[in-house]
Length: 568
Image 1 (cartoon, rainbow, N blue to C red):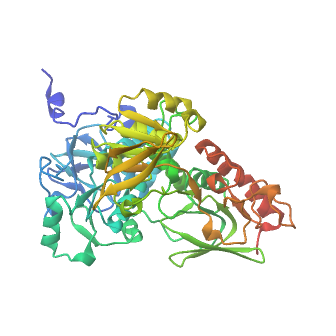
Image 2 (cartoon, rainbow, N blue to C red; image 1 turned 60 degrees about the vertical axis):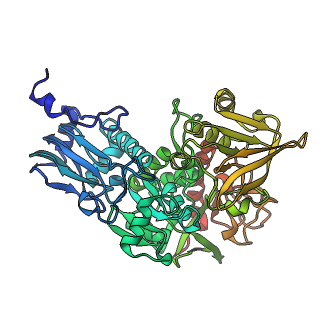
Image 3 (cartoon, rainbow, N blue to C red; image 1 turned 60 degrees about the horizontal axis):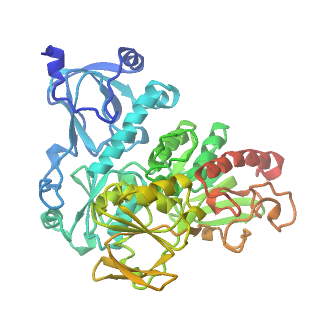
C-alpha cells in the first residue's frame, strides 16, 4: 500500500493526455524565484468563474478543486443531468502537489471559466501573469510544458461544452452568429437549444425573457448578456484588446497565417503594429482540425493550436490586437493612408498590409438557402462534430479542406458522404489525404456528383445528389451539410482604387499598371499598401506560403518607410 503522500493524491484527476503534468523540483524552484508562496485554508476561493484569474497557481501542499462555472451561482444555469436531453454534468478536477491550474485564457486576459477552491489547508505558489508570459515565451522547457498543457485543457473544455452557455433556437441566425463567434475565437461553449433542451426553456421562464432578449449568453453561470453583439461578448470575455492608436508604422488587416506572420516579424523588428480582424485570429487555418503537412510538425498540429501560439507571439513583441473589428474603407489622400472600421475607429498607418484572405463560396443548390443558418457549415471543428454527434453528414468539395473535414467528421459520424464534382481526387487533394479518405470505412466518395436539391421543413432532412455522367439521382438523409468549394477574395472593403485581376484578387509588384514609383513585389497599385496571402493575385493557397509572404513583406515595408513612404 502507498504511504500518506500517495493516499492524499488518490482522488486526483488522472492525466492521460498531458493536460495535467506534475512539475519537477527544479521547475518548481525556477517558478519560486518569480512567485510568492502563501498558505491557503480549506474552502478558500483562489479564483471565481467570470472574474480574471489574476495569477498562475501551483499547488505546493494540499489539494485544490477546479469546478466548471461558479457553484455558488447555479440559480440561472440550472441544467438537467447528462442523462437528460441537453444535460451536462459540471466538470470537476482535483489537483495535488506539483500541479498547476488555469488554461490558455490566463495568458490571453480572459476571465476564468472555472472556480478554483482549496479542498484542504495547504500552500500554493502564486506567479504574476506577466512573469508567466515571460516564462512561456522565453523558457523552452517550462514554458512549452505549461503552454502545451493549457492548449490541451482548452481543447478538452471545448469538447466538454464547458464555459459559455448560449440559450437560443438552433434555427435563429443570431444564435448561429454567436456560436460561430465563440467557435472562431476558440471559446468553450454549448448551445441550450430552445427547440429541444428543457434547461433552455426553464432559464427563459426563470429570467422572464421575451423574444427580443433571445439568444442569451450566460457567462460563468450568472452573468447575462441579452441578444448581444459579438463586440459585447468579446468585451465580456476580455477578448477585445485596447483600442488601437490613431497612427502606427503598420496596420495589418486580417489575422490569418499571413497577417499573423507579418505582425510578429514587423513587431519583432521594432515597428509599431496594429493587427485587426473582423472575427478572430487564425483565419481559415484555425478551422482545420489537424494540419498534417505543415513543416516541423510530423504528427500534425491543429489550426487552433497554431493560432494560439501565434497570438502569444503577437503579445510578446508588443503589437496591438484589435478584434473583432471590421475594416470598411481604405483611403489614400496624397499618400496619407487611413483605414476606417465599422465601429467608427480610424487608424492612419504609414503602411498597410492587406491579409484579409477569402470568403467561402456558397453552394448554389435548389432550396438550400432556407437552411443556410441552421444546417450549412463552412468549418469542421470539434464544435461542429459535437453538434452532429453520430448522425450522417455530407461534405461537398474535392480539395484538402474537404478531405480534412471528411476524415475528422468520420471520427464521430456514422457515415460521411464526400460529394466531389471532379472525377479524380488527385486533381486537387494531397496524396496523404486521399489515402485516408479512401481507406476510411465510414467515408463514401461520390465522384462526378453534385448536390442538386435540399429537402426539409424547418431544418435540412436530406439532399438529392446527381451523378453528372448518367444523370442518376440519389437521396441522402442528413441534417448537416459541410461546404468546401473554394472562396472569393475578401477585398470589397478596399474600394475601386486598388487594382485587381479578373477574379478580384489584388495585383502586386511589376504587374500593376500604375505609373510612378517602383512597385515592390508584394506592393499593390496604391503606394504603401501591400497584399499577402490568399487575397493576393498569384499567391499559393497554402499555410506555409502565406506565412512566408507575411514574413517577406516586412522587409518591403521597411524599404517603403526608408525611401520616402514615411509621412511627417
